[in-house]
Every structure is written in structure tokens, then in C-alpha cells.
Length: 87
Image (cartoon, rainbow, N blue to C red):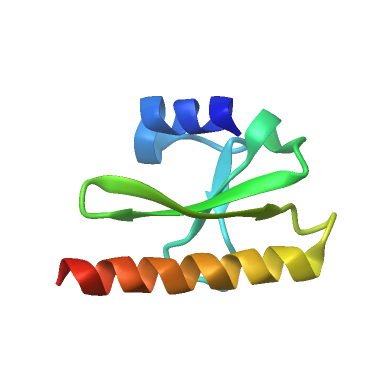
């Protein structure tokens, strides 16, 4: 995950697939995909202002669908809270 975060810091929102992709069903949420998607872990992030915020880390969807959904829900909740705090 550390290497993937360093890539995200270097490339920003231009980090291409397979290192990053949209999360289906959640607006403006992206998944960071360590090891070009070969890792069982994902980091869920969104841009808030000029900062990319990793709001949760969870399992890859095919490995653990329920854990993936829980991580997405946690990320969405945290990101909403962060956005409200900025207002």
C-alpha cells in the first residue's frame, strides 16, 4: 500500500488504470490498486479541494465482497464528514 500511495502522490489524479479506478455506484470515489491490481487490498480515496484523501482501506471486491462494501461505506461517510468540516 505504501508504494501505491507514493505513486498516487507522484501522479495525483492522473494515476492511470490499473493502479487506480472508479468505484462503481459511488460518485467521485476511486480505488487505489496496489501492485497494479494484484493486491488483495484497496485504498478508497477522493479529491477534496487540492488534497487527495484516502478515507478507508479494505479488501478487493472479488476476494471479500462484504468487506469491500463496508470499506466503501466507511470511506463515503468519512469523506462526507470531511467535506462538511471544510464548509
